[in-house]
Length: 151
Image 1 (cartoon, helix red, strand yellow):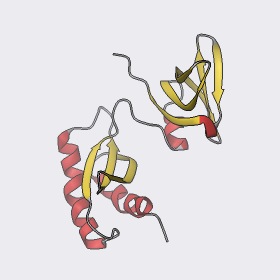
Image 2 (cartoon, helix red, strand yellow):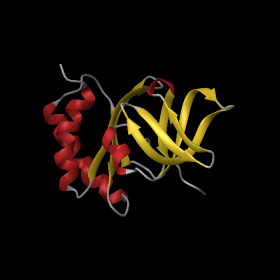
Image 3 (cartoon, rainbow, N blue to C red):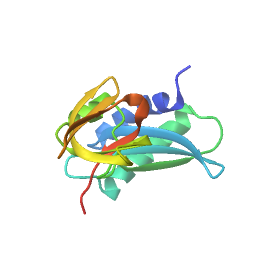
């Protein structure tokens, strides 16, 4: 049986595209005793509240009709964000050459967070270019990689 996120992705993708956006990610998580179905969308130039609404309404109807999730949940549609996490190979490919923050499970070189320019991604291993040269982090050590936004 397919995972909830896979079923919802298949259902959401055409509706997201119809709204002029791309589907970035789908999460189905339990927080504070309640289930949340989160749909993250992206669009050249940024996502507006109107884009989220244009996806949310038809997606809510489609989810009610298809009924892929047992029980109640909260549907949220939002932008992937400027500091979005990179999870899929296509995310890494899209942002090759961009500045990222790699967060590790355990400290390496005295810290858990490393910032640099994304220069490689292979089989889950992430390589960044830093002032001290290239650093490669193994998949098993990486908790999260996200775009880095300078303030």
